[in-house]
Structure formats: structure tokens, C-alpha cells
Image (tube, rainbow, N blue to C red; front, top):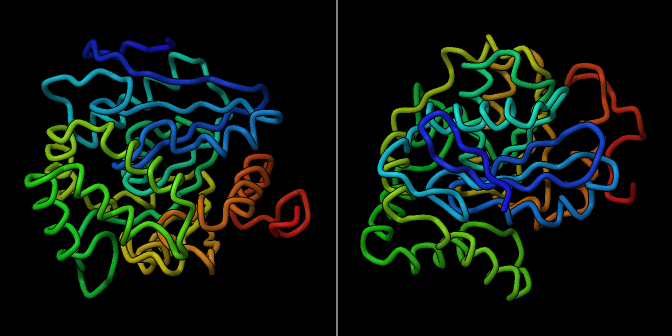
Length: 283
């Protein structure tokens, strides 16, 4: 089982498949490396794909501490260094975007480009009259459910917050299994730290080209946050997924995979056109 032991002696599980320019996938708070299975199948013929489990979930260690955004950003940076990745594209989803943004701030030379999926400039609430991240009501319900019945809380998210249209039952079961692969304790401690997160003070310092992709029907990480992110990042553009909610990788899978491939091949900034034809699910 491939693992990397990071500086605080926590073992991080990863999968490294395919060859070519590396793409590092960073899952959200209710998922493991398995979230990205369909992307790996689609992209590993042309790219080196790296997926991993955050500390506290899946096949990685569940240590007593270290459940902070800074520590998870360090885990990501140490994984990149340990695998000697060069010219990497990073693809995050949900709370994985908080890890990626913090990592790009703490390690400015970490990678070449980033794709933020269903991301936000902060974790929860409205700030300075702007909408972004979770609503206060959603986070309160999530925290209460995690304490009362963690498995049921995960099922409630799957049923009510992930998809724009009803997926196959197997897809929902897989999402539930992925969610309960987290330690409830780890999720609780990480959420407590995330409540302090606000990336705005350093977004202007992130120089990598950034593609922000977001489902317009996302009620979990609210869509308006992605528009604010693009306005604050120096080299960013937004792609709206018109038929997606939070799980845009499932709602519009083919378009999602094409978007990753085209941006990962590009050498220009985020505003530059891709090498191939304009993004479309038929490509």
C-alpha cells in the first residue's frame, strides 16, 4: 500500500497512476481519494494522476492532532515533494479548495496551475455584505448531525446537498461510504479550525493560473463565492457548470473531465484560450 510519512510521522495514503504531466487531486471534507476514480480512469492515459487520503480518513493515519488547514496544506506540499512532482496541476473540490489555497500561499512554487471546484474565499457565512462558502444554517445542521449520528449526517448531505439531478443509487451509496470513511472526530476538529479561515488577505499573492469551476445550483458551497474568488485572484477565470450542484464531477462528468484535461495541457494563463477547441462535452 503506497504511503508517505510526513514530518509529524503521520502516514498519508496515495495512488500514483498514469504517465505525463502530473495532476494532483485534493478531495473535500466528505470524501477520500476514491472520489476521483472516474477522473483517473478518464485521464491516466495522458497524465500522471495522484490521489490521496487526508489525515483522518480512508487509508491514511488518524493521529491525535494535526486537523488544521495549515497542517493539511503541509501534508499536500510534502506529498508533492516526496513524489518529486514538477509542473503539476492541482484539482480541488469543496473544502479541498481551502487546503489548496492555503498551500499555494505557504508554498508559492508548489505547482504550475490550479483548478478550484466548488470553492469559496472563506469557510462559512456572509462577510462584508458578500456571500461565500457554507451558510450558517447549513454548518449548524452539519455540526449537530455529526455529533448526533455521523452516518445519518453524511446520508443527509448525499440526499439533499450534492446533486442537481438524482444520480444512480450506486453513486449515492459510494458517496455515503466515502463520507463515513472519515473519523467523525477528525471532521469535527477540522471544521472548528476551518471556521477561522478567510483567504482574502493573500489571494492577490497567488500567481499561478487558476481555473474556478462551479455548479450554478450549488447550495452547499454557494456559487457567489466563486465569482468573488475570480475577482480577487490575479490570474483566474470562471467556468459555470449550468447543470450542476456541488458534485459537478458527477452531474456533468464528461464536461468536467474535458475541462481538467484542456487546462492541464495549457501553457498560458488562466485567461488564455486552451490549445484545443472551446470547452464542450463532445470533445
